[in-house]
Length: 123
Image 1 (tube, rainbow, N blue to C red):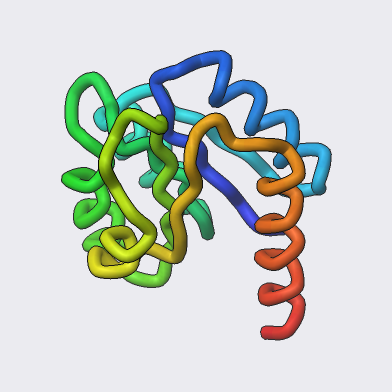
Image 2 (image 1 turned 90 degrees about the horizontal axis):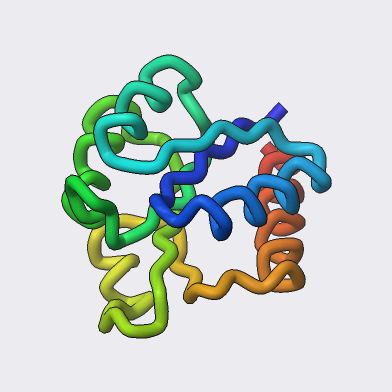
């Protein structure tokens, strides 16, 4: 089973995404800040991370290299609110698997999860 970790300090957004991901049959673990995210990451060893750019203790783009240092094969997708200037190109430059704009719409997340599931099955 594919493990997905959500790192977002906005509880409502994180809980909504977690419900959608669980409905698609993935295991989900969550964190609300960078410190908690690193603890959960080390414990759960997720395959995929949805990482918010704006966290209360460390921005996601600064947290990103810590995850990659621990597990270089983890796939990370940045998520961010519309007020932040951050592009998919910038996400790719950092080595992210992708980028999603908030609010994350269920249909967009379903589509991405299906792509992830298909790619995993092809391995």
